[in-house]
Amino acid sequence: MPPNQPEQQQQQQEQEPLLLQQSQQSDSDEEERAYGSHEKVIIISPEDAEEWAQTPPFSWKKLWLFTGPGFLMSIAFLDPGNLEGDLQAGAIAGYSLLWLLFWATVMGLLVQLLAARVGVATGKHLAELCREEYPPWARTTLWIMAEVALVGADIQEVIGSAIAIKILSNGVLPLWAGVIITALDCFIFLLLENYGVRKLEAVFAILIATMAISFAWMFGETKPDGIELLLGVLIPKLSSKTIKEAVGIVGCIIMPHNVFLHSALVQSRQVDQQKEGRVREALRYYSIESTAALGVSFMINLFVTTVFAKAFYGTDIASSIGLANAGQYLQEKYGEYVPILYIWGIGLLAAGQSSTITGTYAGQFIMGGFLNLRMKKWLRSLVTRTCAIIPTMIVALATDTSEDTLDVLNEWLNVLQSIQIPFALIPLLSLVAKEQIMGVFKIGPLLKVVSWLVAFLVMAINGYLLVDFFSSEVTTVLVGCIVLAFTAAYVGFILYLVLRAANFFDWLSSLQSKRHTNTIS
Image (tube, rainbow, N blue to C red; front, side):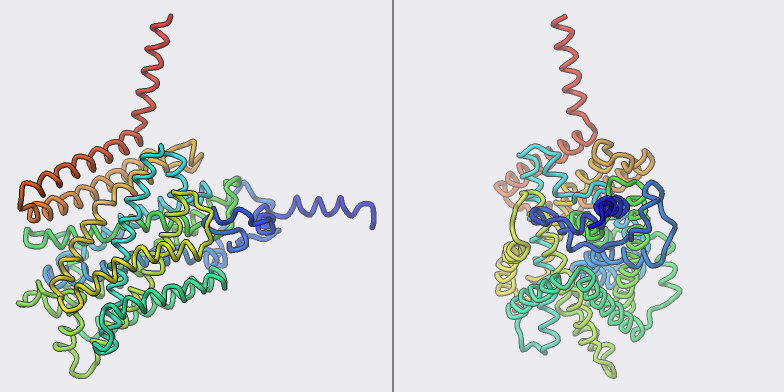
């Protein structure tokens, strides 16, 4: 061996980007991470190593390599719960709430970009950071709340898939059979993870395209009024008769589990957090990709809302339409020449299947991050899937013959998820503004104010929903006392999170320390 060969190898390793070196390292501890180093998509090449400190110029090729996580995140904006909110808003409020759908999507985009920012800049996802940031009792409470929100969302998603399977089988397969099929399908899709992140993302792209084609086809068949649609998007309009639907639109857009999910998904690309230029590059591409993804989701939601606005607004059955009977009503009105019932079923199935899979991924990250579990991913998937399938099967057996019961259950599940929103938003806004966590990538004062305003607006809207819901449900003194005790604990924990985000406890500790020092002196 030539004497200078080891020296040449050393120089080559120094020139090789750290990201590529990481991909060759041992994965002995990868079960603790969102993605093992061998699973990540390599973005850069050795030629890029010279400009670590600067943000590289824009590249369409790199944008394509970064594309994927945002579209997986956008599926939560298209799950069966959102579709039901869309169709009810259209049937009851017509075109008048389209402006709110647009601005709710914009608010959702802001929250998701902050989640991506945390994941890219720190190399850790939100659940991991919460485990490190909060004391044991608080992080345990946050974990329980996140799991409850996830189970609630999963029940809606699985039930949505089961309804679609029932529609496409002409009623041969009941809801409980659809639940079993959905559970098995989810594990089949999870096997695709073994073929690489990009293959899995391609499957989700196909499912999103299926939704887009199905609902666009329905849009073309029903021919909603273009002028009314444009005015609905541009002109804010709200009445006392549509306030419940308005609250439902905003409440469905920000999903607690999706905030945790997106902060983990962005780690599927190799980004060196020690190199400012590479982090800024990743944030730029993820911002473009997430905006495009939510643009697509907005159009799909718009199609669904306007179809039902055109078909049922002002009719006697408008207030009785839900996921289970929506396709049949469409078939009766527009199905003379086109099987619109099955088109609706295909779109609903794509929405349910894709959202159940992303829900399983979110469950993996939430459980692993909060509990610091060293558990195989397939086993973690089995645990999280079982937690959702068992209650969903009970629901399916109880509601298979009653659409009214299914609608009531859906209202309760929406309320359940609304309750959990502060426990994802407040930790996110707290962490993304901390210099010791984010470094130079912490958000500035203006973005911080805007983000907190959005958070308080969303929490206020969902607070209205909760008050309205429970005021009609509380019928006895005992139930009233239980709700009151729950409300006190709930509000108290939110205040704790807000005060901690404002560094109130650090200030209080510092003040006590100064008093103690003054007393001694």
